[in-house]
Image (tube, rainbow, N blue to C red; front, top):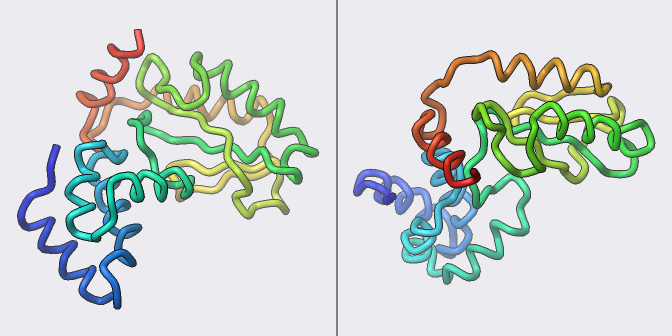
Length: 178
């Protein structure tokens, strides 16, 4: 997995807008994630060359920013807030129901490739607690165990699409998990 010359040039042009190359690291990491659905280790070397940050420093950024991913995810990524506001309104039960409905541990891809469920720090939706976020863009509020089960079941019914490298990448990861 590597970036094309065109993609590298695009990233260089973006980085030139910053006073220091390292300031463009987050953009570059998101770019890689958008391409692959996660940030493969091999891509860290390319981003490292562009930003003058070591692969270890980039790995630290990925670990710090919860919206950056080091592992592949299902066709749908569901984040469920477990911060205090959501916790006091039932997120523990919602998380348990999501884990049960997906059939795998948090952070793993469901057997059908449909979903990955992750507990998450505050999503900023405290007024709608317990809250969640789908694919980092669709917010969910006032979740219940029933609502999350129905949502996961509806995603399981969807057909494989071409998001983030398509079903082939997801199926390869599922084989590794077995």
